[in-house]
Image 1: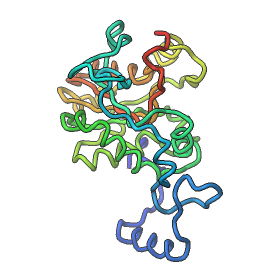
Image 2 (image 1 turned 45 degrees about the horizontal axis):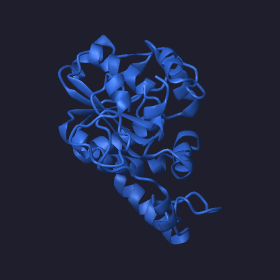
Image 3 (image 1 turned 30 degrees about the vertical axis):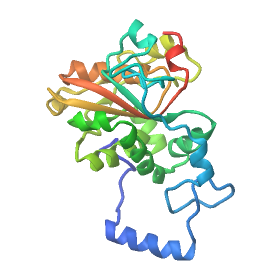
Image 4 (image 1 turned 180 degrees about the vertical axis):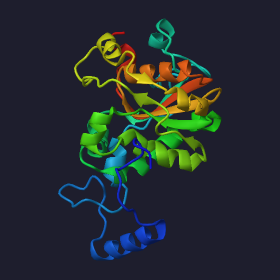
Length: 262
């Protein structure tokens, strides 16, 4: 197991034993919907019908460059005004849903409450939203955490999503090819330019690992896209190391991303 790839160390039971154990627990403690108020931690990754209706899933038409939703179709490959004014280093981006009151809770539970059971569900959401990007990708790579933050959190939530996504599409999974060399401040509260300065030169591909991405199409996975500064920094590092191109897929994106200051 790699450093970025899931929970640290320790023995893990095989798939058959896990399935048998989960089946027994479901008989004793019936699973609840993930959003059920006051329910214990669920054993089944699903949402109630009401929760599904509240989440704003993103379908075409969207901006081909950043995934922002359009009110009406503007033709294949259409880009929003922000992407036309300032092209991004990644080629295309897709998001499964909008980041709002309905989607924020589950995403933060994965990130801060050890809810790694949510990761396969998010992987399926991305699989649907980014199916055109996945069909052309050679490999999947998660946005990395700095080692100090990884030690505190014990897992990389982006890696937890990227691993089952790669398996769904039978793609090469690259959890440690891209690394975060510099510990950065939180991006919260920063403008677009401030976010880009914060992550400037924070990411790199070690020379010994560059051969895994040279000449290949990489799909970069993150949980939330706000201004896209982190994803841009990761993309530049991958392209510098020889990637043919980089696309981006996230669980959720901020609605007004295209209108944020750049």
